[in-house]
Every structure is written in structure tokens, then in C-alpha cells.
Length: 250
Image (tube, rainbow, N blue to C red; front, side, top):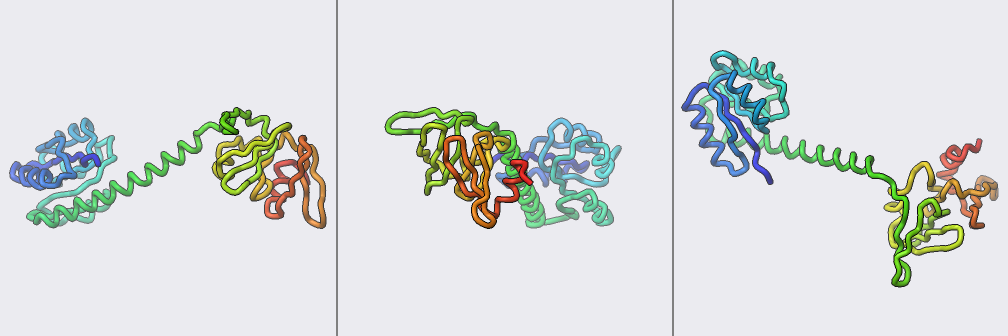
């Protein structure tokens, strides 16, 4: 795991030194800069873009709150470290993870750092889920299947597929003239097929809408789909309304 990049902004040399010792004692943290006033702190944060900022409140030129207001970069976790307790409420209003009142002990500091770690872990989790979702949404649909058949790899164009039937952990892929057994689960294959071209009409059946030859009633509330290759499939009752809508049947 990469270290949490950290900057220290405090106008007191002893305070900066004490924070440096605490940060260096935690192997998950890495100091990438120091600043002794608010103006230097602004420049430091904008240039280094840290994950964690340890920030004093009262400093010459620009105080900690004014520094935060002026920043354009704000994607970091914040711990206020100050000798004055009157700013605590305001600190949490600007979404500080913690507010450490000088003098504080080592345990107080590391408890605050642990809150930072949990927040960063949570952010990383949701960002990875969002990225995974985006990649799935952006993933192009396949235009061919490569199916292994008797020591040979057969390339089947997706547009030539008329229907697909679930077959245990395999599927049966039907074209106009041939049938292939392909080792893939129906749910996995369905995700890769063009949605505008294929429709699932039953838990165990997907059909190519361009290959549908007819649809006819079968029994009281059931319908059958007939394909160009002569095969017929029953539409499940749970999917009947959505299939009829996709096919423009009223």
C-alpha cells in the first residue's frame, strides 16, 4: 500500500518538529512538505496535492481557515492542530477529520490518523467501484464468439447467432445452420451481447430479434417465438410484457 502523503503547516518550529517525529514514526505516513505560515501553506498544498494536511489555526499573514477558503485544491483529509479550543465547531464545519488541542499526547494523534486512514480506505473503495462500473459501461460489445469444438477454434459472428440456450455451465449457440456448445454461463455471455440486438425471453433462452420469424399464442396466456431456423421457444410469463414491448406487440 502506498504511503499517505502529508504536509505540516504550523508557525511554531517546535510544533512542526514534534509533528514531524510523530508522522515519521508511522510507516503509513510520508512527509512531503512543511510550511511556517498560511501563504506558504497554500503554495505547498497546491503544488504537492497531499492526502493529509496537519494544519494550525492561528498563523501570521493567513490563518488556517482563510487558507482553506483560498485553495483551489481540496481533495485531502484535514486535521486541525491548535492551542485554542474556540475554533473546534468551525473546524468540523469545514469537514476536518479531527481537532487536536495542544498539548496532546501521541495516542490522540494516532487516533486521529486512524480516522484519516479509514476515510481514505473508504474513498478508495468507492472510487474503485465507480471505476469498475464505468469500465463495464464503456466496454464494447463483442461482435464474434470463439468457440472450441473438437480440437478446433470456430469463430462465430454474433450477427449470425439466432438463439442461445442455457445448458448447465455451458450454452448452446444456434446459427441458421449449426449448433455449437460453448463453455460459458448464460449470465456472463448475456453481458457481452448487444442489448439492441438480443433479448432474453426466458431464464434459459436468449434470441436475436432480427432472426424472429413469428410469434403466436400457445395456450391461455403463453406465447411462442418462431425463429428463422425453425426452432421455437416459449416466452416466460415473467418476461412476456417486456418482450412484447421490445417487439412492438400490443
